[in-house]
Image 1 (tube, rainbow, N blue to C red):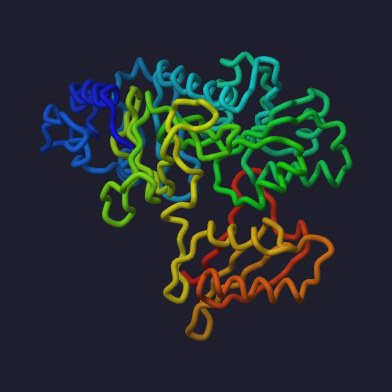
Image 2: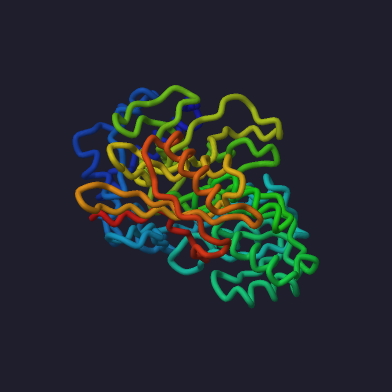
Length: 410
């Protein structure tokens, strides 16, 4: 997507004082004259920022404003390595709420909605982001946070929540519990705003059907404000993102070269207005592409495709690169296969073994389903797999993100 004059102006304004404000960028751009960044082409020659850079800056090396201007910090939700700490100014917090309100309006929410927030609060950006956007919209927030499914469902019924905010994993868990308890007629949900993890089409259809809601993908990451920087619309054709706050690039994950519009690559984000911790050319590891043209919904903001996977989600087995998205797509085509699966990769007797566990929908023959899956996996992925069909609900559910691939070789 071409950089427009407004975006270039904001970047140039930021560059005038960036080195003086930030020790991090003073070192990163030590031998670069930022005043010479006059075009999009000049900008694309700047080095990328990586997650490792942010970890090296722990705890507050990214801070680009005086101490008295920082009103909050958030931290990435990753469970390994040094955490990433992102400081926020009052303006950062306000801008984030503005973007989140746009997301809700794009999804058709109004001040009459009751927004049931299940993502976590605290250092994680999710819960408080969902809440701030809803409050700015004027909707009623039911700030549940994660866990305690009994209480979640009780409050959902008593408060007549109309919108569920959740990870896809927890939305599925709630949908299954509602069906199991036979309380669907007491649930008033109309929409689901779902984020934090990539999910397949079969899982989407299950959640939408079992909850009786229209679903919207919301996008974001802690390093770039948090969730709320992009969302799908009623046309369900990609996600609109707010290009007056953010500049997006799509690059080849291996070479870093800018890819033509429409080609799938790694999303790179530059913040245009962030004060506490501006990020320049940050590599997200998320795989997507730009969608050309204007959306039929009438929204003028540009679109990227729904996140297709992550560069660091890939595993290599017997010389073949495998992404979770490939398995999601495979399961969509197999009758009797649920959306829920797990992959176990082991190394035994000198060779790699991949076992795919898949939940079976009711009314299907297990042996026939295993044979179908075995053939489909070999055709789609290119290697043989051991297929294990299990009952519905046998695989673990999560209140946060569900781990699907377990590599036991290392």
